[in-house]
Length: 212
Figure (spheres, rainbow, N blue to C red):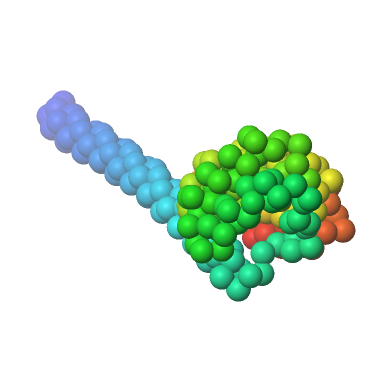
């Protein structure tokens, strides 16, 4: 009787062990699936956050461009006190021609004209002014890649010009348009550090706060 009982219990025990193994395997599979779903959810969330950041960046860049273009239309360009007169009539005409294009909203032609002026009169008293409007024209024409080196050259060649901090503001705006937030922060920090008393420094500080 004892042997018969033991013999009958063995298959039952084996069956129970198999059920336990299957339950464990199913549980492991469920955990694996949940882990994979969680990983995919995190990746999807990261992609959504990147998309949102990109949209916010584009929106900020669009706002900056709209503000700048509105200033141009209203004649409220930055640093208006810069000298725009020289004694050489030919030099003055060479500057006035692209300036007229700029005021007409013909920004590409204006940029080309200021570039020509800087080639012909690199040592002119109007060089910083021409460099500023060259870069401003490129920005208004939405040529953001060309805007940056044009205005950085102005700052490098004329660091004491009243146009320099304003030029860096436009550089930062162009960098934001190109989604170069690190570059924009560097440009804005340069304004705060090197031109702390300028009106541009206050604007730069506000924009740095937005970019945090």
